[in-house]
Structures are given as structure tokens and as C-alpha cells.
Amino acid sequence: SRPTFLRVSRSVETSDHDYERLKQEKLLVLCRRVLALPVGRGMLTLGTLRPVPAEPLPLPELCLSGRVPPTNATLKLDVSNCPSDLKVWPDFHNGVAAGLRLVNAERSNEDTIRQITRTWIVYN
Image (tube, rainbow, N blue to C red; front, top):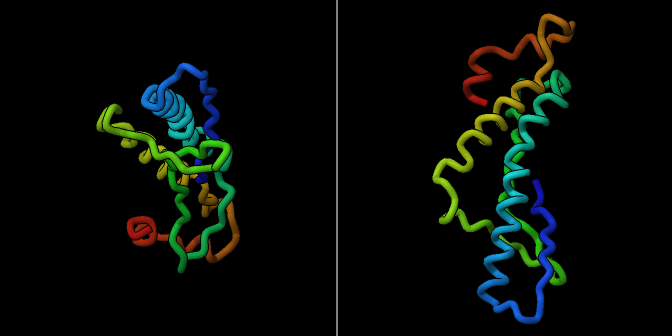
């Protein structure tokens, strides 16, 4: 995925340190939204991918960074203030959503889908 667009207004009396803290707080809120996307993606893309047995299953990356205007500089989320398991469940749901994209082999007449075996699933 791409970095989210991060817009934080800055008043005149805000110090640089406080402004950076405000950007990190806003970025944390936006990153929590990004971390919730795999659940919806799994429901939305159910059974839409016809895989090629020679290629790995595409797995979208969860991006925890934002772009700050006007320079579009990339700001990474400071995870030192976050729980240590911040990405554990979102990564799990991201993998499940990728697996749910696969077309059911019994409902398809194509031989390439029937070549998806247990071994292919383990290594991809």
C-alpha cells in the first residue's frame, strides 16, 4: 500500500516538538484504520483471484507511514509508544484475506486452479 496523506494544522504558538507529537498522534489514528483494512478486503475480494501455480500468492503490504504536505515528506510511525503486538493480528488478517481471494476449485472447471495443492499453499 501507499503512505496515507497526513494533514495536521499548525498554529503559530505550537513548538516543533509539539507539532511532531501531533503528527505522530494523527498518523497513529490513520495507521489503525490501515490495519483494519484487511478484514474488509477479505470480504470484498472473496473468490476473485485465479492463481497461477508457478507464481506466489500476492500479499499486499501494510504501510505504517504517511506523507506530510507541502513537501510530501514521508513520516514513519514511531512504534515505541505503541503496543508490541500492534501488527500481529492485522498481519494475520492480511494473510487470511489473501487466501480468501482464491477461487474455489470445485466451482471452477480450469485445470490451473486444480493444481493448487497443499504444498503450494504451504510454500506461498
